[in-house]
Image (cartoon, rainbow, N blue to C red; front, top):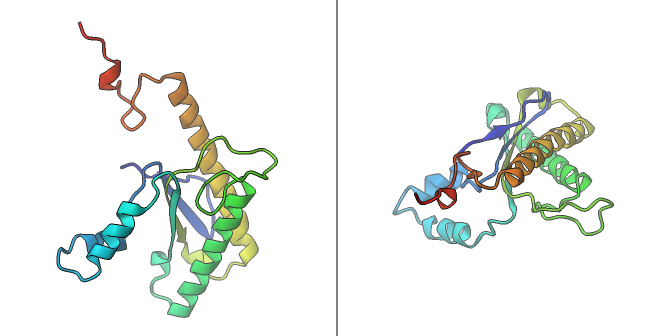
Amino acid sequence: MKWLASSTFSSSLLLRYCPQNVIPPVAQRYLGSPFHPIRPKIAHMHATRDPNTLWWRASVAPIGDLKRVVRSWCARKARLALQQALRNHGFDDLGRPLSDFPVPQKYNLTGSLEVIVRPNGVGQSFETFRDDADHLLGHILRLRSAHLERASKNPAKNLKSGKPSKKSKSKS
């Protein structure tokens, strides 16, 4: 699994994108315990979740030493900022293209996206969060479209490893 972290600077947010769907760490903790009471529910939720959508979450781990009300306030701002950024780029909250967008997207935005609130973002306004999320998501979409273009030009390569796929090797 390779995380594609956005390399552009933002004072309030960090977006980490992975083209594959990744189980969140909290869910992994429950799935790793065979006798935990909510393990069957988490396993069912993961098994029935649509892999053709964007799995995203907000993380406030870097500001874990602050009070709970501050962490939840920052997480809410980050979630709303990401939802608005997705709409600004032509996607709904699950990464599916919006039909009424002026320039409709060709593909679903799939994979996993983690929105991490930086410590400097605690005192920032919602407009700063929104601008940072819009800028960082645009950067990730540009990297993703460049990757999709390279993959479409060279279909013999496997998208995950970059190596020729076994199907494309000729039998000699």
